[in-house]
Image (cartoon, rainbow, N blue to C red):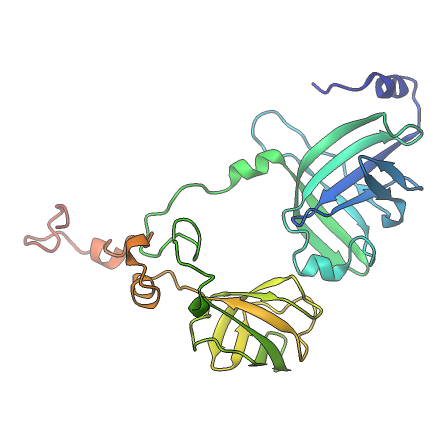
Length: 290
């Protein structure tokens, strides 16, 4: 049951029409943006909720139990608040969202309708549509480990323990020439060949500054990304790359000398071995593998 402030409850009971919805979006970098469906800007909680966004929201879905609640909001893309480039480079991925019902004649009289995170975002012709997911969405995500041959740790995390700040695991460089939407040649690049495949690339200057990409392939001074960045790659764009890993036992042992921290199960038998008919002898007798 919602605890509605007395001032707002009185306004609702009187049939007042001075109500608006305000949406606060907090990005991963801590920047907060505000949008409202009112025809004038509103301010509360140190955030200005801009009417210029033209925001509208669907009806909210709520249910008992652990089902994921949610709704959709739509608005205009503009350079000051929510640009297409910022959405494309992932600046709003997983952003925290609050939706408020506000009496615009007295913004201190308000009620929190929804709290959650930004889900799928669609863009087109100067507008955006965003899915808002309730807090129970986190409970539907996979948890725990998988019994598999490949390592399930992220390179450099607390379980892996590879030092990504070491000189052999990171390098900087600049784009010498763009060879396609995802491929470019480099200069001032001192990284060893192949070590950064499946690694992480962070743009440190240019139109994509601050955005992150995954390296699909690295051959000598040429790098291919898994996805094209939001802004076309340009000559002189600077970047930082860190090593990648294919999650195999061999890479962990030979490339990183990190066999003690391998988080996979390289000796488990494959499906082809398990599917063989049982027979006498030490290979497949149904007993424990020695």
